[in-house]
Length: 268
Picture 1 (cartoon, rainbow, N blue to C red):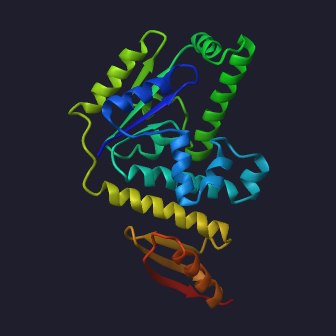
Picture 2: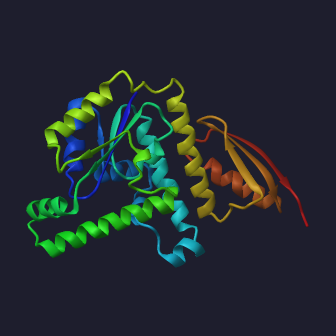
Picture 3: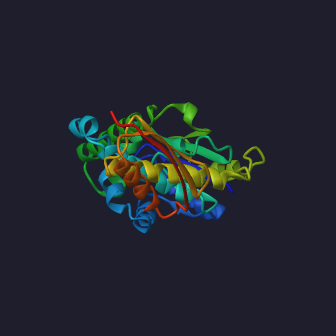
């Protein structure tokens, strides 16, 4: 099992590179439309649509759990899709979510502002001012989202294995670079436990978002995903009703088969 992630500066042609590379590698391609379909299957479509890969508004960010819920469910979708096998992800923070996997190869496609504006004017049939505004908004939103979601700088070269400048490198050459690198011996196949790890990370995000949505997360209550079916609850709650409510919420999650409820009721 192998993963490729391709991120782009809007107007650099990165999406075209990603689509053609996925085709040549014979990997499923996942961008917005494909991830929305996966989110719909999981019942998370409205959450993912609301997130839209933008930093939340100030009031919502600091006075609501909704951004954390949306982010948890977005990450769960990425991990669930990755469990299916070989895949090429286009953007959406995949370079960070899959960064700990040696079997993932990360690409950033860039270009100068002038070249990017020119490409956008040609492809979208818009004037220069509109193209520049769209690019500036896209750059700002991507930078803000990755800073909020992962506390990382979007264009940090350390997040990527190769950076391709399409001012100088053609689309076909860029695709060839990605495909050959992805197939190289240096990129190792995922470890045998990769599916298990992805499943546990997906389940962790699902549980956290469900408890947040139910208003049952607290600094005194914890959970551990022991495997893709088993969850252990521990910590302190105030009543038996709270203990039962937490277990009920966790048990309602499709993938949870076993619960070890070690929560301790402590009445003040």
